[in-house]
Length: 83
Image (cartoon, rainbow, N blue to C red):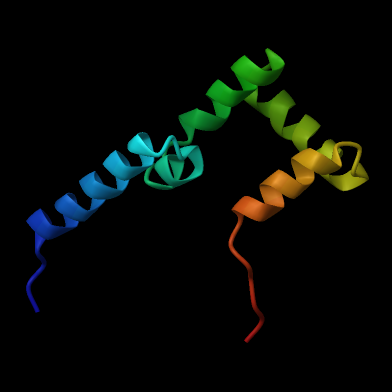
């Protein structure tokens, strides 16, 4: 079985274009493996460094002080099933 690079690129381009058209940020971001996005979120959302943002996020999720945020994150993650 040959690797069809053109077909893979076409599918990725289509997914990105559809996400942009539909203003679907979660689908758009799912197409990128960019660790810099978390640092950008830290700077824009909390005006903090990445490490401080990650610590804040862990605290918020552990103590459930922001249930809406926790639910939004939970809803965007895949379901993990034991085997």
